[in-house]
Length: 271
Length: 255
Image 1 (cartoon, helix red, strand yellow):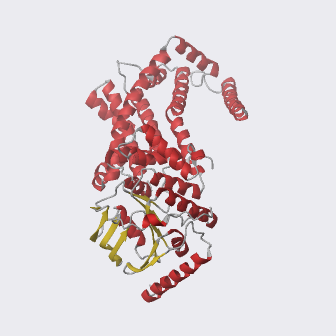
Image 2 (image 1 turned 60 degrees about the vertical axis):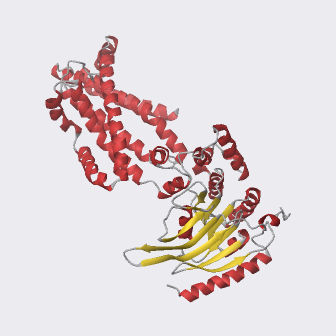
Image 3 (image 1 turned 120 degrees about the horizontal axis):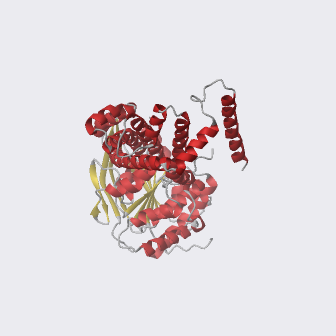
C-alpha cells in the first residue's frame, strides 16, 4: 500500500473500444405510466478502462447495465462487445449484482466453479486451479469449503467477485455491488477492487449512486439524469492509484460531481 | 444420551400402562391382548418368516410405485412451473389428485387391473404423483429470480439450468414434497392391501386384514407396530441425508 503503481502509459495507446453503447433507448410500459428509462444513450468503454456510472435512483443506470449484460433488450440502439452485437447474456460480460446471488446449495468453492464449469476449453484441473487462484486473490482461500450462510456480507461479495472473475470475462459489469455493505467493509473492498483491477486489467463498468465511490474507483465517471435517463456529463478522474476514499483531492472531485448531480435533480424536479 | 433415556422411559411407561389396562380385566383378552402376547406373535412371525416376507412384498410395491410417481411428478412439476398453460391444466389436475384421498383409487384400480400387482402400483403412483408435482412446481416458482439471472449471465441455459440451478434451488420444497408423496404412497398402499387380496404376494396390509378376520388382535397390533417402524426407518434412510445436507448448506434448522 502507499506505492502508486498505476502504469498509466499502458492506457495511453488508443485501443479499439471494448464495449460500445450505441444510441440505446428503453421504455418500460406499466399500467400506471410509461417510464422512459433510457433515452438515446451512447457510450464507449476502452480496453482495460474502469468506468463508473452515477446518477440518482430512477436514472436508468441499472437498466443500462442490464442491457449491456444482455439480460434486457433495448427498444432501440445496440450494444457491441468487442465489435460484435450483443444478443443475450454471454460469458464475455459477467455481472456482479447488489445481492451476492451466490447459490446456497454449493459451498464457496462450488460457487466459484459454477461459471468455470461452463467455460469451454479448460481441463478440470485447470478449472480447480483457477478457482483456487481467484479465491486467493479475494483473500478467501481458507473458506473454500465454507457454506454461503456462514459468510459475512463482505465475504459473500468477495466470493461473487471471484466467481465473476474466474471465467476470465472481457468485461466485468458491477451493479452497486457494495451498496448493502457497512462502511468499514466497503472501504476495505475499495482497496481490494483497485488492487485486483491493477493486477488483472479487467475492463469494468461499475454502477453506483455513491459519488465518492465512483471517484475512488473510476478512470471516468459518467453522470446520468433521470426521466428520461440520459448521460448528462462526463468527468475524467486523473488521480493517482491506489486511491483513498477519504483523500482530500478525491473529496474535491467528488464534491464537483455531487454539485452537478444536484443540478440534474433540481433541473428535473423532485418527481 | 439424556434425550434417549427420557424417550426410553416414556415408551416404557406407555407399555406399563398398557399392561395395567390388560391386568385390570375390564376388557376381554380378545379385544386387548397383552404386550407379551403381541411380542410373542411378533417373535413367532419373525422366526417363521411371515413378517419378513410381507415386508419384502410391501416395500417392493412401495418403492417401485414411489419411484415411478416421482419420475412422473418431477418433470411434470417443472413443466408446470415453466408454462402457465401447463399450470392451468395439469396443475389443476394435480391439485385434484392431491385432494382426493388415494384410497378412492382402489375401486377403479380393481376394475381396471383386477387383483394384480398392477392395481397396487396404480394406487401408489396416483397417491404420489400429485403431491410431488405440486411441490416441484411450488419449489421452482419460489426460486429468487436473482439466481436465474446470475446463472444466465454465466451461460447456464436449458437442461443445465434445470438440473444445476432450478432443481437444487428448490430442494427445500422438493424434499418436503417428496416426504409428503412418500406418506401418501405408504397410506394408499396400506389401504389397497387391506382392501384387496392379491395372490402374487401377501403384504403387511394383508396380514392386518387376516388378523381382523381371525380375531387375532395380537397380530393386528403387532403388524401395526411393524408398519410404524418401517415408516420411521424409511424416513431415516430416504430423507434424513437430504435434510441434513439442506440444513448444513442453507443454514436452516438451528433456530
